[in-house]
Length: 85
Image 1 (cartoon, rainbow, N blue to C red):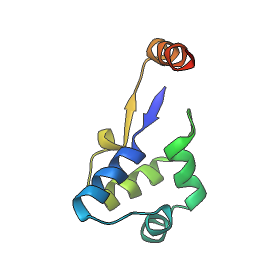
Image 2: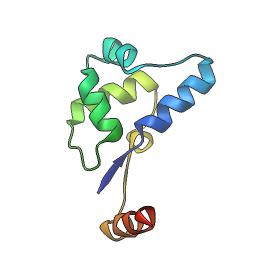
Image 3: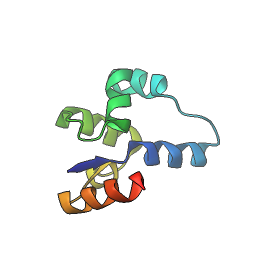
Image 4: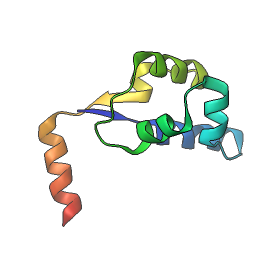
């Protein structure tokens, strides 16, 4: 499964700048709809385009590996079991 790390990147950016960063601001600067940003940020298994990943990397000045990571299915299943307890 691919895990998006958008929330973490936004938090890092907010810490560096000292101001809140909204999906509205990111949407305005990148051309990615707010709903899409929300889904990338919070919907497990969401499928987005490489164009969106490219725009986010350009906006945040980061690498693809900063935006997303591969998590083996076995680890996802373990995480689901431990969070339900």
